[in-house]
Length: 302
Length: 263
Image 1 (cartoon, rainbow over the protein chains, first blue to last red):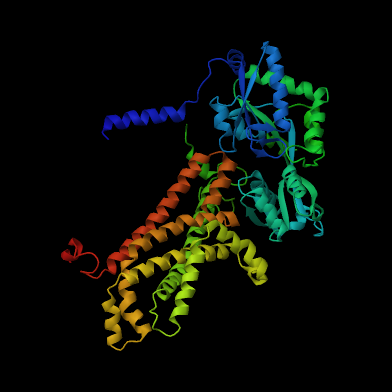
Image 2 (cartoon, rainbow over the protein chains, first blue to last red):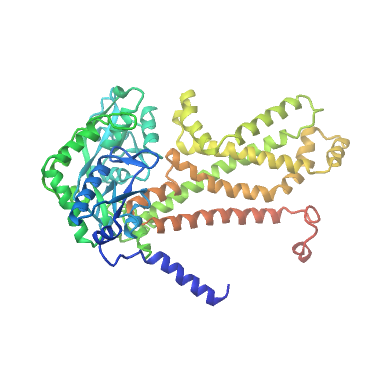
């Protein structure tokens, strides 16, 4: 390759990597002109967002988003609004929102300061509590009893960092073991390789519900941390964010969000009619009472 | 897309930029918390440790099993040894490596409780070592069988025992022949050690998965981890090439090349 070709190649690569598609107009104009909106969904994010069957998605956040889009449809005076579903992963969700592939991401994304530099979040609709699951007969009731014992958590989650911070601040030392996914971490607890499994409460509840003997396990102790989980959209589009926020705030005020919680977390859900059985937490109630889009860091200061 | 290499100087507890980038290694600020660079270095150490332990196991067992597969049927009990070695090779090379790692980590300690005390990096090294030993055994067998049958016959004619024939005639030549494929196998082992993340060994792959989640700087982290894997594998390649050159018998395998002519 000669030098000229090299320069051209480098320049085109730089273009591909540096310029997300910038919509001259906002998302609302885009939805109005195309008559469609693209919703980012997850394949398996618990009851928040998951695939029921090939190409069909459901969950607490998916249903909230559908209602938000219906409100936006009415606001824009559109006769029909086509919703396109695009499955996203933890690795690609932020780039896909930034470059305009996805208009509104309805999965299980934690709202934190680092991400707020790249994307915007709607008001918090779900507050995740990080809890401890142990064997029911272990006698463990608090995190501090785990000093020097084996604690399982999953690689690639914020819980790993959280445990590290807790060790430093409380002067304790856990013997951490890492599962490659949540099912693996639960197996560590089940097989006795770990004394406790520290993870998002909804994930612990889901794993216990699917265990051979759910009664052998329980979720104990203090809430180690809380993390706001929110619907994600493009940054610097105040009109769209306002429309989404207004719609969600309306659902918070008229109690329909509470009914959605009941539907997805306290009743059997498709496709297997399994029950998550996660009661509405105090932190989530507070987030509904005072709608806000504060990042996780603001919760930790409390 | 702007790359931010400063991410490696950040503290792993607070996420702030640390005073000393390599605090815990060079003792610049031994009181301070480790940075992502410190963590990266320790992860690289784990990768090398797992690769080295399993390489040792794989070379010893692979050579032994590969040799056993070539024992002539005339030797007393030779047929059983060949059968044993054949079973070994077929078992360990026909099961996916990740499955073997899980068997050693989850199943074996459940059957033999004494192994529960083994740290996970031993178990994963055993799994990788046995898996690779089956592959090395086949290469050693190929090397031995490529020797002209006259070599073995000459050894026997001199009155050497079977052990002596292998020790002084067959293995010194057979093992030289298989150095090039052994090089690939050793390099593979460095890369295969990445399965250790699945059983809680804090090596490079686990570092990459965890640190990219914490810092949202996945591209920088994966680039550096990729470079370290490539560097480690290439270092193995250089060492093996050096061994190959040092042990070369002029005129054997490659015709007397320009390097030997220069000496």
